[in-house]
Amino acid sequence: MNESPDSSADIVRGRFDRLGVLISGLCMVHCVAGLFLIGVLGLGGGVLLNPAIHRFGLVAAFLVGMVTIGAGALKHGHRLPLALGTTGLALMAAAIVSDHGTGEALLTICGVVLVASAHIVNLRRSGC
Image (cartoon, rainbow, N blue to C red; front, side, top):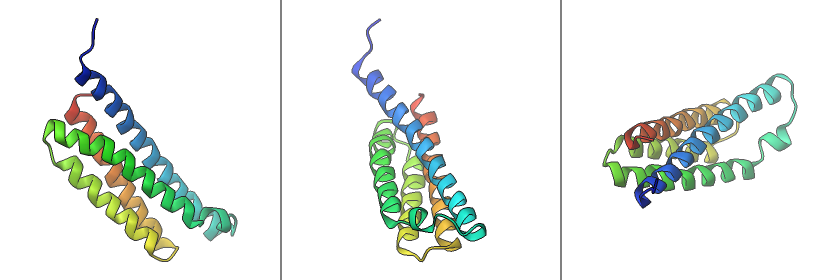
């Protein structure tokens, strides 16, 4: 069977949406594990609190979100994924400029939950 170009693009966007959910989950695990390891055990502060990791994560989330959520919103016309994703990325960016600690982790966790939710809604709206 021949697939139309639109269905191939939908498959790629669907895979990137799933990747976005995975990255969001890994980010959340990183935050929770970081709080536990540093706060309770006093381990890993140099690696887990490295700002480069957080900046890289935000850039990755932005790029994956732009490709999937932005393109999905243009295709299916629903703005909820775009609103959720944008708000989530804004919270993640606020976490990067805030001091390390519980506040930063809460901002990040709330942000990644919103971004993951945006990817899930986008998958459902796109029919992937």
